[in-house]
Length: 128
Image (cartoon, rainbow, N blue to C red):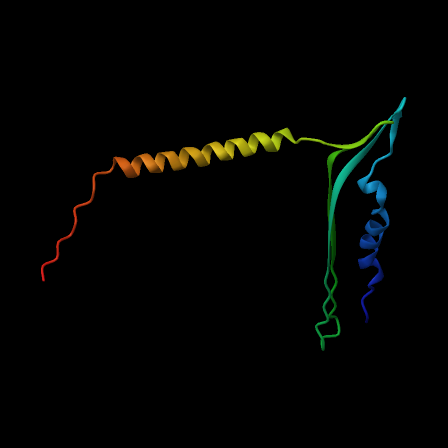
């Protein structure tokens, strides 16, 4: 009995059909002379597996996997005079990064103060 591969690959094929320019660039919006095109970052991953297990008659296998993410990155701002990319700033990441940096600074300042506050260790004398 040969396992059917088509149903396993079908979700991956459907995902590949959806990957096109519209996944990265959104629909342009116009207001007067200004056009704005949203821009996103996309990432996708795929996996596949299979097995056999011969000589057992009921052996088989299978597997598949796909995943992805889309994150807004900014927009293209088009005017009659210029074309510019304006990034979207993720304020949550900035706040988290500042907390991490603050914790790192506090750690090293505390360590430095402790090292200088310790009395010098008694030197070991060796007699020859």
